[in-house]
Image 1 (cartoon, rainbow, N blue to C red):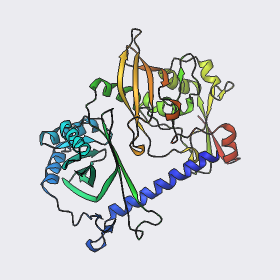
Image 2 (image 1 turned 90 degrees about the vertical axis):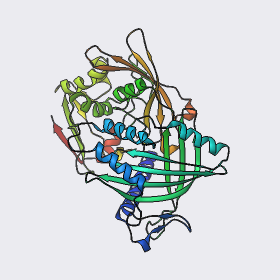
Image 3 (image 1 turned 180 degrees about the horizontal axis):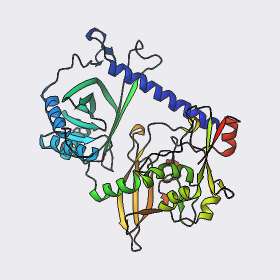
Length: 416
């Protein structure tokens, strides 16, 4: 528990730092009060940042993508915008690499220039999820890469606003065998604006090589909805013959919205110092989990706190002391095999930009699609060597003893 609390405290402190930084960058400052990074690098306020023709072109494409009456979902919208940017000659991709980058050859050519210590430059537009993007202007000379990173927001009034621009040298630059471009750089902020912070890191992981469309579809349907946040479905070894250390409470959390298409109703108390205990009816708890697992109810009950007298499952939602870091890896299916028994085997890599890796670890997950469109998870196997398998961001749910020690008599029982 001591180590867990240390990690949680560190993560919370980092999140607070980022909140402070975001406030500084979005509040803006006068021309005379630009945030100085060093003698040559400056964060530029949007009031002095001129909208050049590139930004105007991007704004026009955004306007078309977000025009009234447009029925595209977010992924379709981002695909449309990236395609249009590509048609206009821009290198463009989304920040979660769900869409193939445009003009791959330009990026590869730039990477080759870095390796051969030639002089070259390239601009990459990286779409963010919430109507914003980054404009990365990269220059290389004698093997060193210099980056100007501008963060822009688009509003439905049709305007693109520069929220901040920073310049830095790439401390890490790598084009991986998986086809990813990874880079990291640091820039200093004036102590006057951020206390006790010497510098800020910017990490980027961009898939350069195209990914098989079927792999993307399988990832979106079976892996991304679960992911690596607050559950261990893809973080541990298990099968239908031995469910191992799977935490079915965490899986109930993430699978309830999948099953019922509505938010999880069994939530923690608003007062972080009070624990909540629910008694969830057997039919609801089991319906969720038996939808996605072929598991005997006797086994499920043995791995949870089942109350036979009331035919309910005792359930304690994750609370303040079980929070994980906000920056975690995301999954990417890189290969698949359709098996003779109707199952599908997926090979998955965990992409972790903040750790500068396109394969924090890898796993093999087997899925059983059903004729009615439903599916079940069959097994998961960790493929990475033990020494490379570091899940430092993951926080296990509290045990009953740990929960009681923290909340003592400060909890509420909620019958359902």
